[in-house]
Length: 375
Image 1 (cartoon, rainbow, N blue to C red):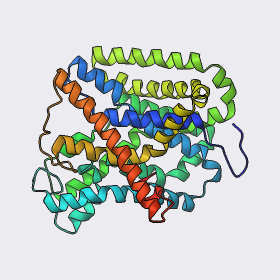
Image 2: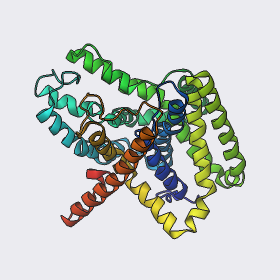
Image 3: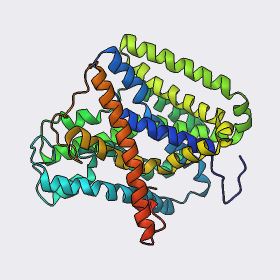
């Protein structure tokens, strides 16, 4: 991987990794059907719910890859333009619909008075569009960026923190967004803010290992890419075996430790697959173009896909806190067809929406559409 003092090349295998990851994210939000606690539900959950860990891993990898030109003020400015602004753009329709039409006291923001209700809807967009909790969490990573680079420069301290963070992830249950939102009993403004801000911070702590592993993987690949690529089949096979072994422990013993370890193994297995097949994908123009297209649109898909899921689940663009129109917690062909149909509809509609938005913005003279729609 050649580099200069002012520029590093794009990593094609990371583009393909991003393309696979966004498919996983949408799958994780749609196809986890089956009776709760049953084999089918737990299998679907294990296989399809690992996308967030991979998503954070990629963020850490790319942060480290571009850290040679890190300047904190400029970094925060870029993150505001490329992450926060698109978030504000995408969450606004849900906020407007919520403020205008919501009549369900089960929503934790329902009883908050204006204008605090409006501010709260933007701050806690996850209440209206569930995946948006990620923005609150990743913002903490942005703020602590200089500390992460400081740790990286001190090898012993770095390895200590990395190991401790992995142990925390493996032996501590992931903070539940659904639990925080849907099982909240005290709807006082202070309690709502306390619980939701705590969720952001606890998620940051839980996914800290993923971000650090991404940074470490970047460092190793930057230094030893050729050696790693020569051994990539063996390394990928090892992680695949570990991933399947963790699956067996999770399904048989209902072990959350195996579940969370499996997501770590999955991340490195997928990274290995992308490196392994990088040259093959590059040799197939149509496949390469499709993968790069998905990578380019991945962040936009993340922002917009839940709108279409909500339309199918609640017949509303925001979460109405009512029972979905179809119960997916059943071992039936109907549940299978409904969830996979939802995935296909959400993914295709997201791509079409983003393409249309990008075209409209380009037609109006806006070339840098990324700061509006993430693409």
